[in-house]
Amino acid sequence: MANTSWSERIRTVLAAFGLCFVTSAMAGETTLLVHGHIYTADPSRPWAEALAIDGTRIVAVGSDGDLMRRWQKGARVVDLGGRTVIPGIVDAHMHLFFGALELAGFNLSTPKHSVTPADPEALVATVQEFAKAHPSDRIVIGRADFSSEQPTAPTFALLDRAVTDRPVIVHNSTEHSIWLNTKALELAGITDQPVSDAEEERYVVRDASGRPTGLLLEAAQELANRAVIRALTTEEKLALLRGGVRYLNQFGITSIVNATGDLAEIELYGMLRDRGELTVRTRTAFGAVAVPHRLTLRFLEAIEAARSRFHDEWVSANVVKFFADGSSGMYPPLVYRAADYRTLVEELDRRGFQLMTHAERKDSVHLALDAYENAARNNGPRDRRARIEHDFVISDEDAARQGSLAVIAGVQPAFCCSDVGTSFDPGDPTASDRWRTLLTAHATLALSTDWPCMWPPDPFVNIQQAVTRQIWRSPDTSVIETAPFDGANQGGAVPQIGRIYVPEERITVREAVDGYTRGAAFASFFDDRVGVLKPGMLADLAVLSQDVFAVPATEISRTRVALTMVGGRIVYEDSSAH
Image (cartoon, one colour):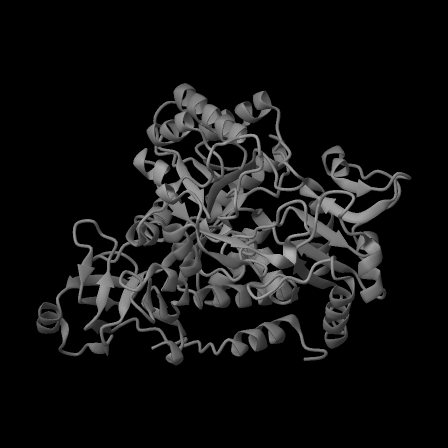
């Protein structure tokens, strides 16, 4: 694969998964899917045998006999052979651009194993091998598990052993820290002198003499991210995103919410849409990891421009993402003073934006609920669909309040569960990942992978973990003090057979599927078009290799997608999964 472009390499990566993309649309003819086991996610009619599609939309759902009598003449008939069909997966929280970058780079944290700085020879050899195989890459991008806390955090010296002639940028699997070699520090403009932005400088890790170590945490990551974006051409960015969305289709994903982004990124999705190359529906939030928002004229003009220009079935905006805390160190650092966050929430809510807040700590969840409640009281009623992302630790009182305030819980079950769930404070006995409690409080659950934090972005691993709450542990990452995600199938983690973390917080398969379809669509303001299979909705669906509602819970993660359809168009098909 030497000297191949990123776009060519992504195609090769996808081919290695045995993917076959069928690009012919079925617009202009009626298609009947018959003899299926179809879960519609429509509470009024949850199950069906058949459905009819005309162009991009579903026109009928019902029994084989009824639809064949009404629609068979002149229709294209597809026999599902009893296979299970669900609505297209709506991944309610991910980072597509970062995922696409890392898909084209090297990955040291896979379900099978994790190569960490604790094994320096293996790490250097792996990075070196990748760099030699891709001499035309101006920047070498990768993904790995590593500590973000001194004294076990890595430095540029180890990466310099692997590559000295080009920048190497390694994303932590949490996406809350980045590890650079010397060339990458130069590319990002990081020297012995402080950088101009105080918030970014705060998280540039330096040694006792003030020299950068090669580690950037939280907001400081933007120094490297901006440098990468500047270095890539528009066509290179588009090629990365094309590969990323097609990769997502492999998992039955048909719609996503980008939980970070800006106007320039949204414009890239608009370009793909205009070229007919966008195969997932996108909604992109304004925000960067752990970077506090400021109500500058430039920021306000950008979010207003995105809202006014992008609001169709494929590309939409109107969302602002906050980070109440981060996800580095031994305890996630706070990003805002409470009064500043509350003021920002109230003003952006007044302007009609949907708001979502990353909150892992119990006090951060409380802070977000306080701010949302205050905004609703002062700005009056409207359809807000405010969201809290992760919701790792929440008190009984705040769980009840989250339901009463109709604040959506954006959760990622595959991050759970270690011996202590996703809790950070060993002195706090509160259980984490309280999905059943939130449902009982009538909060909407919106499931997601947070890709590339979860790798791969497999919804069925997530569904299995939501149903089982199996405890996992990774021998490969046990030496990392700052708790990498050792949840289901992450970084070499293996299940601890028979060990369940807080079993009373498990949810059912149907509730988990609903969280990935109807619930996630509602959370994303997509519910007028996708999330359920019923007449009038867009024909976004996934045909599965097995019946997730009937197989043993521990087998759900073995599910593969045989076919993914977006708007009546087959965008992915894998004959081996039939």
